[in-house]
Image 1: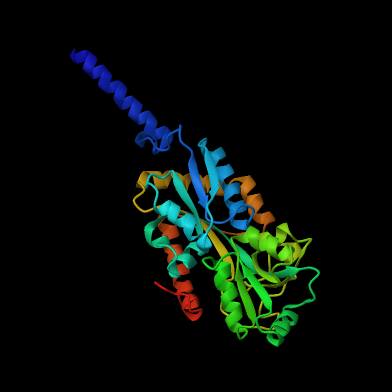
Image 2: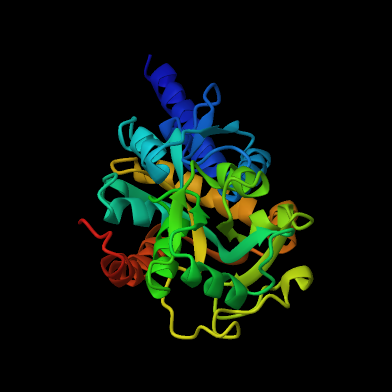
Length: 327
């Protein structure tokens, strides 16, 4: 009996050792091979945020052998999808496609947002561009501004939702130019694109990747970052300063990241962060970012938390100046 017990103990120890060396968190049962991991994108399908997380999910699946799926839960400028994650289980099987939209929605009191979320991985920045349909009469940003000032409230300035960073940027632009525009929120980037292309909205604040996807139909007037686009096809688009409007402080781009509900086990967060890092560094995702002019800023876990603290600090004065801060 003693020999049998010792043999069983040795087999058990060997099994645990094998699991730890092979799978990191597999000894804790995460991820369960029978379960899929869902990335909640709080914007409509077809927008830049959606496309980024679909590309990442595919590479995370390849890197891990685990099934990753993307689901779009829209509403309240990203708050509805964010709340879906916050109200779910803290088990690592539901991730939020987070970013500056999460920061903006939290500060506007639309969701508990980053106050109830934890950090997995930071991904990239997507610069903002002011663009119009290419048959509109405005050839430059100055043309647009002068026309808006001559007809206050007549020209609609669209964004992807007031809970997101383009919403904050559009309010900032409107304040900078004496509230000359009719600021109009839409249900995500895809809805904004369709409205501008369909003639229902005059001007949009878009992510650069959205402009890239619709270059044949859009005329970009200004990029909201301090530097030119890294894409050759958009490198000539002027900055706000070059367009004749220096000193305007507004969000210059959209940051994307992965977050989970607070209370998610540390081992699960580490597995997710390591898998995201492998996916981020894959040749396919690196090409996707390069083709879309995305600015890589990868970090994970505690390093990502420290990085996000700087974004939150930058957003406070912008939201307060726009009259949107409610925390």
